[in-house]
Length: 481
Image (cartoon, rainbow, N blue to C red):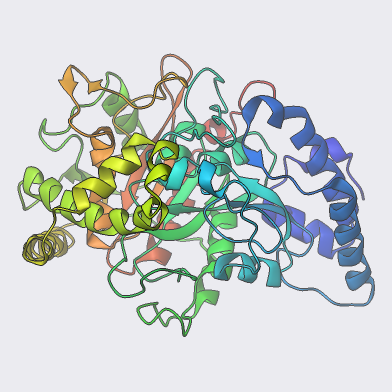
């Protein structure tokens, strides 16, 4: 059996892999279908950048086909097109970081994540767009421009993995990588009606890295239209590496196994807007609570949960940690004073704020972070998983840099409108954004589930059960796809 190329773009990554390995479809046909979809939709979406020449990609697809004829498979991604987020290195492609100062930099070798994905058979067709230095949950930069929301091109795609999320939603990719510091896998997934997993701290090692001991708030991870695809990609990305001494030494093949489970009796703690602390635009809580009803219908027990620590204390500790980690990333680009004019003001603010930090301040913030982690452990004595909206605002105008206010409350930093995502990050916990549905204006929103420490597999199983129970809602496609 074979399918028209136009049908292949709607396949899950797992179904594509099975069709390729059973020789029902060739790697060339998959590549042709992918490139046709990219050519059709990417000019408006601007999700995929630094596109590789089609002849080069088709030649690589032909080689993958030849390998299969010889009885050789590189892995489950054999022949499947991928585009790597433009913060990670791919040999021979530009790594611009969305920064004009880096627009001509070509990587001489693959980063660890890209090398693992290539080793599993992926063919890299280009990069996915990201905001400058990955800062801010809105994907725009001075190198490539803005990536537009899959459901409404006048709206933001979220970020910083906005290009990946839009490429998935608009069927230009079947599964995708991303990275997450302050919701960068979860926010764009929520705004484009796909799944995005922030793995546990240390689950997916990041290399090369400026620091491998302190900088543990950012992590790479998977995105997908299906939880099964996301888990399979995690099985490729995860696994300890000698260059990353804090990476988790657990067998990543666990994520390639079955995800079927009975969620009955699982206890879900609903954090909501933290008793009014987090401002949220109208309709977000209602939509997320309707998604929570699905968990009750699955047999879960849903109850209100409360953080065991004042959230403003968490935020103040977060600011210290974030500035301490982000500032040194920006610093090398400011060795030449004239470079300041080519770096976005939000990145300059992070850098300049970091210059005033002391070691004592960082240790105090670390003590606050430790208290917060222990308070989260206490919550997991009551609940198996926590739930919270994946964003505080609906996708906003694509020409806006960031929301100045939320529900009438002024935002005192460029990223405070995404405060909702910091709790999983700061505690090093796995968190997955699952689609909650479409709001009254036809824009998507996500519900974030937070799992126990290193409980990625259990979290994936619950998300998979949610997917199976909501297939009609999840089948909705963006206009024009």
